Length: 412
Ligand SMILES: Cc1cc2nc3c(=O)[nH]c(=O)nc-3n(C[C@H](O)[C@H](O)[C@H](O)COP(=O)(O)OP(=O)(O)OC[C@H]3O[C@@H](n4cnc5c(N)ncnc54)[C@H](O)[C@@H]3O)c2cc1C
Picture 1 (cartoon, rainbow, N blue to C red):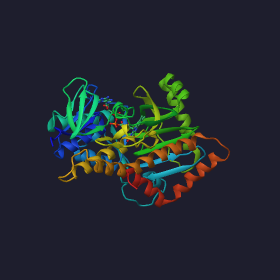
Picture 2 (picture 1 turned 135 degrees about the vertical axis):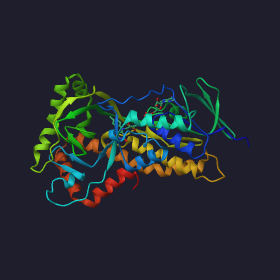
Picture 3 (picture 1 turned 180 degrees about the horizontal axis):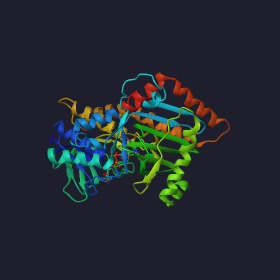
Picture 4 (picture 1 turned 30 degrees about the vertical axis):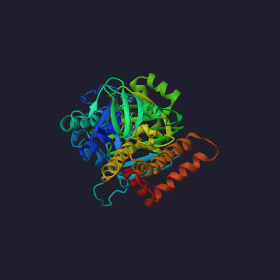
């Protein structure tokens, strides 16, 4: 039977699609990545990229494996040493360095990083740098798939600009709206959240101690994530009408609004670790609409979904890209260890990939959607119960360790 010229064609050269493309190329497969937008070069600025990601240790390991991590400027990476989460009625959860920081005098080892903050543009640029050296022809741009035909030995992809391509497996890594997913007939359920995420960077009055801080307040979630030096990144998932008003404010008014949310919780307990004060807004705030997206399936014969094309999650847990990179790492492992028999589009391989990813994805979507609904409701008694629950979880070391392990590995 005639072999398809490409083992795998990936649509979408975001971080997920590029990292998967590199991993498969490095494993000896014939791979092509199609991207419809120009590949912009990232030029670092003193104030840091306003799109930043909190990446888990397993995401870091995968990016190290493909070479993108080594391309990062270490002085612009920020380890997350701990987390502190505030409820809306004095509920509180602490992880890592945050839970030790109040026990003055008790000897303790240097805290282990729970994850690392990276700049979105710098990570993409790092992967592109690896590509330029190792596989200059990996990405075909600007290009996209217009039609897909099934043939006996694979798929025939008709492209917008170039000649048709044949492949054993087509992978959609083209984001949450995924045109390729729709084109292949996979339907998806969308639920729009009444939240818009505002992101911007700030200079602070003092050190943040490497702590990621998060406040649940009035049905909204405000996070201040540490950046190198005295800088933090704001991710404020605010109700849409409120978000619009926040975007219209002056930087000083916005900083006052932020302090208005974090101030009361910081003063709530005598042992509270104060978040540093915001001094200056460094980047113009951007707003992102948020939605939950669940496709009917992760795989079809000769077709697989990865990254945001496979799942839309609320960013309150900072796990969207982490899930996507674990999709890519899992699919790469399945394809590269398939042995001599099946080609990359083999149905049993794709089902193995889907089985491995279904549960971690469902768990993260369930957790973030559940928290959104839990803190969205003011039903009688609920605010007290949810804050009581947070304080109980805070006392259960084993449960917190399991939650951290899950966030870091994406496994059970
Ligand atoms: C406010 C906010 C904060 C977040 N914070 C975190 C965090 O801290 N940690 C974390 O893990 N995640 C976080 N996320 C989630 C993260 O941003 C996404 O999960 C991640 O960017 C998805 O990457 P991707 O490569 O799968 O998709 P995308 O980044 O959407 O890339 C898709 C690519 O496909 C291309 N494309 C689209 N359509 C086509 C087509 N028809 N043909 C060819 N190419 C196409 C696009 O141009 C793009 O290059 C956050 C999200 C938001 C909104």
